Each structure stands twice: as C-alpha cells, then as structure tokens.
Image (cartoon, rainbow, N blue to C red; front, side, top):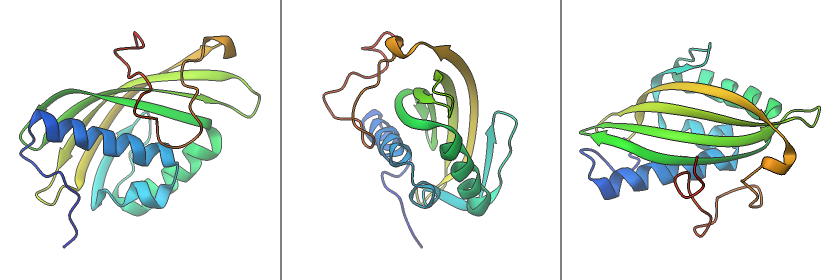
Length: 155
C-alpha cells in the first residue's frame, strides 16, 4: 500500500513538513501529482464544490488551474493534533481578463495511517487586488525557501 510521509501522529516538525509538501505539490499545478496525496475515496469541500475521490479531485484541479492563471500559493500550519492539521493559506492568481486576485482561506485536513488525506475542508475568500499590490513574485513552481511566508508578509 502506498504511503505519503510524514505520517501521523504529527509532531510540530512533521506537521510543518506535511504542509510544505502540500504547498509544493499545489504550486506544481499538476492535477495528477496533487491527486496522488489523497485517498481513492477522499472527501472535499471547496467553496460550493464537493468532489469525492481522486478522479473528481483531478477534474476539479484541471478546471481550477485553467481558470486561475499564474497561480502562486503559500500555506502555513495553524494547528495540529493526532492525524489532523489545520492550515491557513493565501494564493495569488489572475483571470483571463488580466484581473488579479488574492484568495485567502483555511483548510482542515484528516489523514489515514498511510499519510494520505481522507478529508479536505476548505473555506476560501477572493479579494480583487491591483497588480501593484501583489506579493508573490517567484517564478512559477515551488516557492523558494528564502521567500517570506504568510506571517512574514503580514497576511
């Protein structure tokens, strides 16, 4: 059976590592790669969508990244206990009309014994921003280690 370390129960160090691995995967904008960290029967709540299972997650992510262009994400651990993590995040993106947004949110994650995410519950708000107010400027892909996180950016 596949595993995705680090595994629960989480320590602060392993919880932070799990969050960074998730951020890195999402910044790849690769629906196949991202979907592989979820159980086959994963359950999501993302805005008004409720994907169930890896196939629906992949389709959701394909639609998301076709709509949210130049996507750059930062995640930060909020709390952890046993096999659950609470995460806050912000990401910047533009639409096909060149309007920029910063989306803020919170996620609750629950993992199985193999380290795969069984449940992802997300609450997200979108804020239109001017291009001059952007804060996430690294090249598309993984956020560099020396780039500030959410707390350092005052977000």
